[in-house]
Length: 76
Image 1 (tube, rainbow, N blue to C red):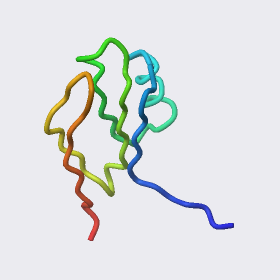
Image 2 (spheres, rainbow, N blue to C red):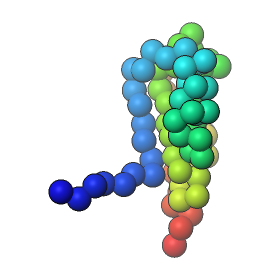
Image 3 (cartoon, one colour):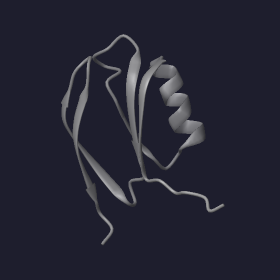
């Protein structure tokens, strides 16, 4: 069985505290970029992750119910 590689990931309904999100970024996916709405919501319910050497994420709008982004592949 071949392993699959991914460069963008979205996690929904995580209910993570901001400290847990920081822990994930610091110790698990050090080189990945994280986008969440932790500043707006009480808990982080949506987390977008991407490999910044392959993908760029531009945040358009953040709300307690959603994150609107533009995702571009920067590798041609």
